[in-house]
Length: 117
Image (cartoon, rainbow, N blue to C red; front, side, top):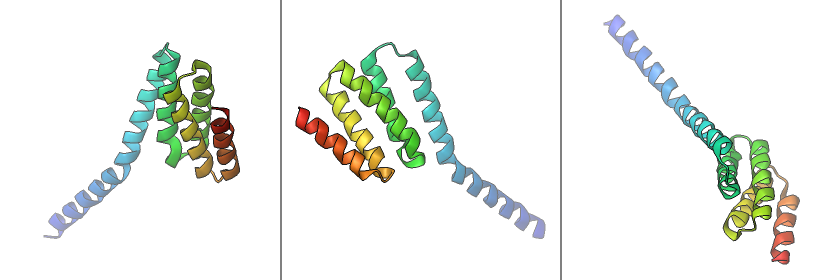
């Protein structure tokens, strides 16, 4: 009876560990897929979309990485001059600044580009 109880407890612990780490495994797979897609992309508009997805994925896990990807997307979006990628990049970058506690930079970025349009 004790042996069966130990096996059940061991199985439950293993299940808890697997469930606990599964979001991180999915996160890693998503990032790897997006990075691979970014490396293979030749279209600037596709790169902006992928960079925005990377910025969104990183926002909660590592805000500094989110800022890097969002900044790259924003700079590229300015160059291609399309409104949807530009707006998405602007929102992602300002959200990353907010998440990092850089409120003034986020607000300044939005006002600067709202007034320019």
